[in-house]
Amino acid sequence: MSLAFQPPIDRTRHIFCNRTLNLRAIKAIGYDMDYTLIHYHVDVWERRAYEHARQRLAVKGWPVGDLVFDGSLVSRALVIDKELGNLVKADRFGFVKTAAHGTKMLDYPELRERYYRTVVDLRDSRWEFLNTLFSISVGCLYGQCVDLLDNGQLPLPMGYPELFKEVQRALDLTHIEGELKAEIIRDPTAFVDLDPDLPAALQDQRDAGKKLVLITNSEWSYTDAMMRWVFEQQLGLPSWRALFDMIIVQARKPDFFLGTSPAYEIINENGDLRPLPPPQKPVAGEGRLYYGGNAGLVESALGLQGADILYVGDHIFADVHASKRTVRWRTALVLRELEDDIRAIDGFRADEAKLGALMRDKTALEERVAVLRLELMRRRAGRASVVEGSQSEIELEIERVKGRLSEVDQAVSPLAEAAATVPHPRWGAIMRAGIDKSHIARQIERYADIYLSRVSNFLWATPSAYFRSPKSSLPHDT
Image 1: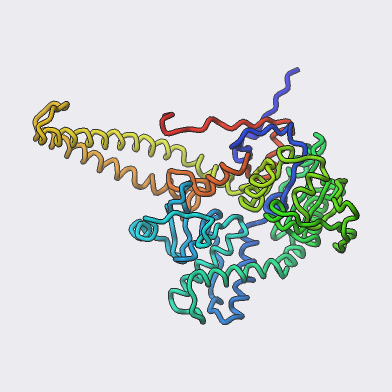
Image 2: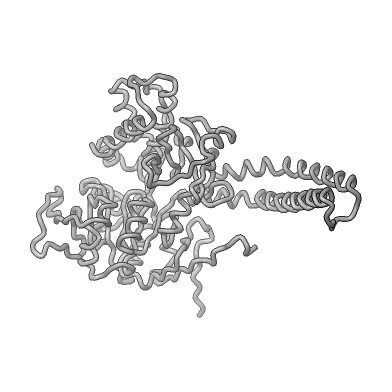
């Protein structure tokens, strides 16, 4: 009898590897909750967050009542330029490739004027990185309020940085004060995008002997309500807590990975806390509940450290960067946009091949013009020539090749424009900035050992899978 394990044909459900990872060597897997274990309908969630924040600004006298949420204005992984009131997309080197001022896209001359000498550096407070899908509402509302500020419609004199603080504060209060989360708990069906494959993927990992840990910044009441609804009421598990050896809420990531905050035990369903008894260290065990703490306490409770643990989250900084850089856990980034990006890119393959062939023709023609111009320069200087024909013949050939170049450019232009807007009509693919890698792609390369569109993709990669990164390509490889 022959056995064959078939990974999904749909490559949107594959797991992509930056740094070789042997899952068999992983002893514990930590998970974030929001947009990791539980995925939301982004447009629904962000629309309601936007509406709550807009109402807070309206109470302050801002003329925002007619503003309408438009998620197409923004993409995750853009950067807000608080100095100029712009949304920008940068490549891996930090050079701005696309930008919008408020809600208006900048044309190339405007883009060059503003950013010719500017490099995006996220360590500079000028820049605000839209790390997660929760950032869509921030970017949309900020862009629309920039338009109001430019039109002199806001009640108080302020600059673009102060404007961002006001918009961000309104969104933060929406999350902190719990109005939106209360709505979600009352009607999770409207907000949650269920994944029926998720329980089996987690159960495979548990059955393989791996410890599972939930580490979320959400509070206990919300975490319990949502995990109970998803895993018990919708997906049929007897107890969501039985999946995990430790459950940590209000972890305050990224500080969870950077600091030494104490942990408290949650002692009842109401979320009441008590200090841990000496030696004040949490203990792993089915469904054990904790508030706060730090990564060192998790390692101590599990008897593991560093590369024994894989952490899976959706926030490139708070989940992936912080855990990789400080405690050296292995890392996985959940990037749901990959699914739309891959489908759109695969659908564009035929046009991409045409564009590639045209660009090869263009390169050959440009090289031909360069050689002919060099020949004219050498002849004028009285130096040896390598091209046959008279000077007038060479000049005619240059004009002929330039005419052909013009024809190729006309064919390239619509294909290049289409490629730049696959799949997002304004910002293109999340991992690309023009023909180069985007700023977030560079961060994913540096800090995420693997990346995937959803946690249930592990269902097609056994708990003993060995992920090997492909050979990286260099310009001289082709």
